[in-house]
Amino acid sequence: MKGMKCRCGFATVSEKAKCPRCGRIMKPAEWPDEAKVLSFSELHVVPEGTEDPYNLVLVEIGKKGPKIPCWTSGKMKENDEVTIIDRDGKYFCTPRTELTETSSKLNR
Ligand SMILES: [Zn+2]
Image (cartoon, rainbow, N blue to C red):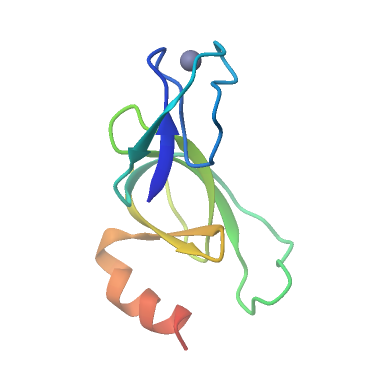
């Protein structure tokens, strides 16, 4: 997925010209869709348009990449490896092993 990065180490998936941390002009970056779980929160509120209960996970993309919140229907723990799916600007993530099953469900 596309994003931006700065020499100071700041990384993001949004299109910002200037670094919010140090004010330098950032450079475009291409991030992998593979990420690692930093923290997991179980939610009991279901976002509009979804049937399943959804949970919120904070993930880190690649090595020292952006940290972004993602939705997931599964349960995860810290350091789990996940794949990120960008759906209309909303990020979902799924454990690597369950990718095939979950993508077919999402594309229903
Ligand atoms: Zn910076």
